[in-house]
Length: 107
Image (cartoon, rainbow, N blue to C red; front, side, top):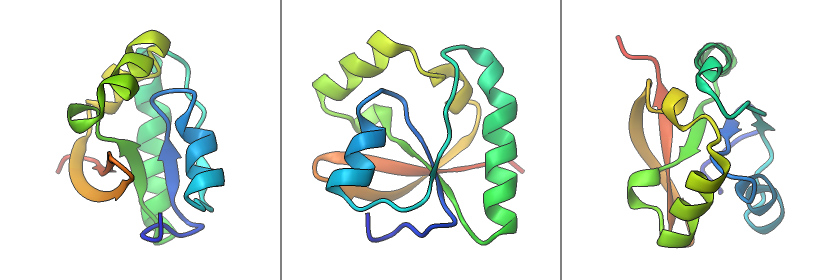
């Protein structure tokens, strides 16, 4: 995750990526803890606004291209998927065979 900085925020869609990002890929930014429901839209919007003010970005696993095991964990945990889909996604980087997108507030 060399593309990330300490000013960035990761929105995990499953319970695994928080640990993977930090331990295996050297992620040094914040991790946004989210409830598994639609009320996460507000916290994600606030995280994007805060990150942009400080020169950072907000990243999320790109579910559309995720391997089957990652997609299954996302379905099993239900972590804020609907809320994440409410924002624009821009391709950002990959960690192994998992792609990440940068979340943006639609203009």
